[in-house]
Length: 165
Image (tube, rainbow, N blue to C red; front, side):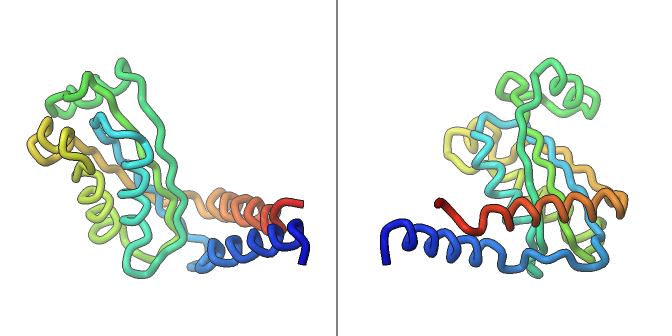
């Protein structure tokens, strides 16, 4: 087997592992959970915590994005909720799209809140006395929009399955 074939096969194997559980279930029902996190952490740290929390015990299919909110937009959000602002207002917004039959009331939003609240490094932990400022909102995505999002996502993954050529 030549190098090109080996690399293509390795890519197919990685793709196969990544696709485990990647199927649209529950008629495409998708919950959208958004967490605003006032933190000095890197986006990747918050992403990892929220991502594992969204999958839950059923290993639901989930997409998670994390973005930095400009302080001039974030600080009024915290002030409106009467929450003290730390880290010069640096706020990350993590949005999770979860294909699940769970309800928002109990499991999903609670897991996201708990995961987002726990800082991953000691410096941040000390600065916020062990708990970050977090606001979590949730809702159900319109069915047709959710189905189209999942079709697009899976189509993009399928395009990558053959690996490098």
